[in-house]
Length: 389
Image (tube, rainbow, N blue to C red; front, side):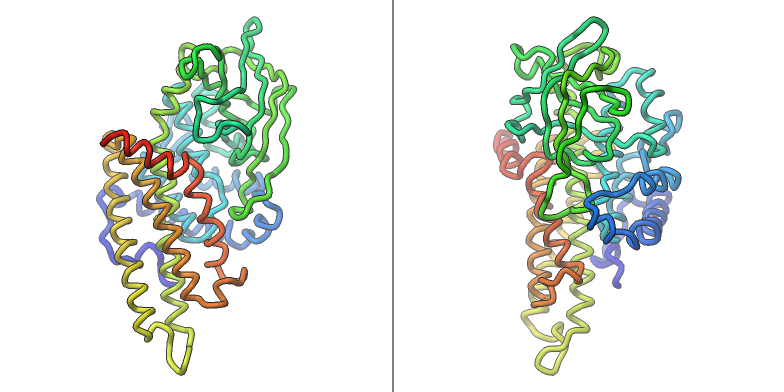
């Protein structure tokens, strides 16, 4: 197959040089050799297994951007991008290590006490702990201020009650950052983030592993907290009520990460489709020889190139500390929209075979759809952008 990383013919940005490029190559080999051969099994089981997480940890693919003193590799978001791109280019998109690495772990790094960082980050880096963040509730999706899950103080413990849904890594996660209300009367200012180690508590239940359209191999679950008691020392931050601010500070990286998955799948879809239309014959000639095919692929490659240049710029700005929430929202919305368009057009160029599950483009078509929903719907992204006008 044509290398998706080279399909656009662009030079590597400065942030992707040297050790970041080496990490991408290593991650690609790992995904191709360790994960891809079992990926159909994971899709059928609708979950990965812990062994895969431990192998990823041993290979240095967990917590790459965490400092070395906490078991990480001391990298930046550039390193996380390399890993997520490798996942997308190999086509094992359901492996939930992106959320674990660049969403869950950073909350602990940025807001955790030294004791919390020493306790949790090394185990996240090895895969002993698998991370999740429980934001969404049955009645609160993109509107995080509508969260109902309650954490009441009970001596030197919190008692957590409530339910969450659509939680990525939900069946396997044993370290969950829970978005709670510690003071419901204060609205956003009454929101706090509390860490629950599920192996150490009573009253925690996992509900259904949700039956999704795509990303079947990624376990996505309902979670129930029935008076779950955790020490007050599990609060992230030095006082209650900082959760909403913490969420807002970290959402730009989450939204950029969604853009990472989008551009990686776009490039893989193009690479697969160009290979296919060169081989597939219709009316006595290769499908690539039809002007419609050439024009369509010319459009898609142009838009993909624009998307990659924009994405590279966002990563460079983020590494330098200058990626603002509005631009991150633009990246999330526009790249995930483009992902849906490119994959759809590529499936069309496959003809009837594109609708068959044996062809990777069919799985990509299903997997791409959720990108416009999670991390804040694209409608919410446009609302945030609109407020900046």
